[in-house]
Image 1 (cartoon, one colour):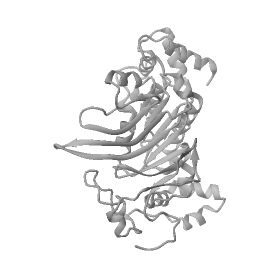
Image 2 (cartoon, rainbow, N blue to C red):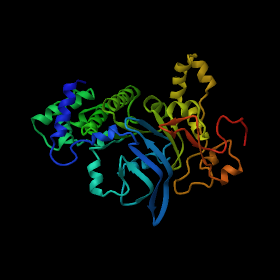
Image 3 (cartoon, rainbow, N blue to C red):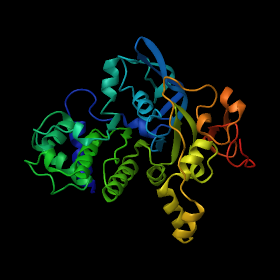
Image 4 (cartoon, rainbow, N blue to C red):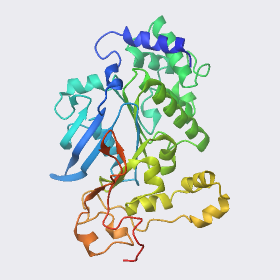
Length: 374
């Protein structure tokens, strides 16, 4: 990546016709949170009744910070992240609590104002890149349109520079179509199109799930590199704690529509408090291998010591979350209180960021207590 390539891309963005020609760069320089949710909830109108699918979420994301949202399939990760950027507003969903992007109240702005934020200030990368690419339009033309909504000589040079920034220079020609690219190449094109307007916040919804390990590492490295270079915040949705541990500063663990533990990634993974987080870490082969490198112990010895565990049972339906702690039916440490009372949020005073406690969890019997059986 060169300064010349950057200038080509930014010049085209700045000269694009219409509103929203690139992000509000003051967002990346602000001192307060870029995105903040307080007691945020989402309800789904299902068959004439409202079902709470996300409940009581409190999250804060600073400019340039990388947040991982993890949990099993069906835990509410995608619903939460799409609701945080209001991409699913209207129709079946209703929202409660507070949700702010910079100084903007996202729950109060009009649809028109939201559309001006999407793309220019907020970008989204989906799990399947083929849903973002038109199979009958050359890839280079789609990147040009993502840059400025038009195609000319200047936009072509900028599009080529942008593809170079995602390591596709010389790969995508004038007549290259998306169906001619591999999954990893298609995902990098989708990321390039999302980066085209230089957003302040990028949401990546399981962007590496369908990719092999080698390509996954390239895509993750690309996301980290571009967030650093652009001072851009990132929300990475994944079911893989190993992936999040490589990329994110902070992590939020979701279960049954609520955040059960959040904090600095290294603290949450190395010293989980909520029993569900502890079980996820114990069930992650990537973290066992990673630990063998960090601890300097022989991999086989460590794998025996950290024998992978399964989590018995399955997630409850979001429409029938049990009383008390939602993880209680699957937890070997659960007692009567766990089944009847929702655990309060515990904030660790030893961990803070800008005066805000950041490692917090909700569990009646947190890990680190004297171990016992139910």
